[in-house]
Length: 107
Image (tube, rainbow, N blue to C red; front, side, top):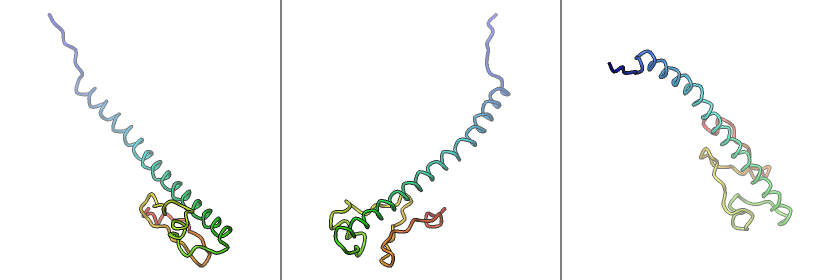
């Protein structure tokens, strides 16, 4: 007599439940990690822009009129884009690019 072994319905349901629980744990962590990486990239861009603004000031003995001035005078290749799609705002009052808040990023 041939005997066939197969998974029972209970075993299959148990595996599906375990995979679902693992997915519920892992997916939010992956999303959180991506958002944190984007925030760090945004902050790095702001720091780099502010460093180039300072360099411009030291070399040119004047402050740049805008971020595009840094591009036209070859201090940066292009004005970077925030990973969240938000534009960087240059303040001619304190000659800085301000860091974005979570609200600026739509979080």
